[in-house]
Amino acid sequence: MKRADSERLKDILESINKIEKYYIREHFERDELMQAGLVHFLEIIGEACRSLTQEFKDKHSQIKWSDPINFRNVLIHQYFEIDFFLVQQVIENELPILKAQIELILTEF
Figure 1 (cartoon, rainbow, N blue to C red):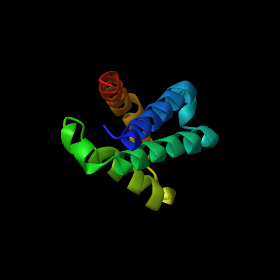
Figure 2: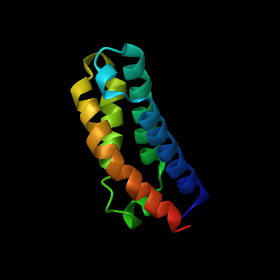
Figure 3: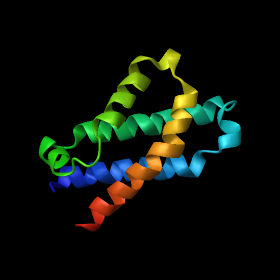
Figure 4: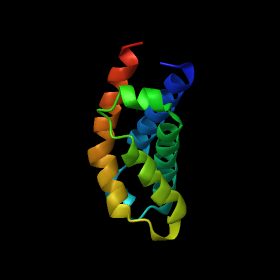
């Protein structure tokens, strides 16, 4: 794994940890500041995934790298039409899986 790839993985993990720290399900729907902050961390995750080398992504093809990349593109380019229910679903259902996969990859090094 190239150093740049390991740094991107750490960026992903750091953003997931921040989302876990600040996400409160009961407040999410009405707290615009929380929504904005969590969307920002999701954008970082997508950008970090996009920045991984193709060699690395091919080696770790069990992770569907296109999902966070495509979600980041939606968040960035359709920011006035963000589906916060979908954001909530990603946070609750997809990020724990991605976190476990990233943590496993990082233990290899």
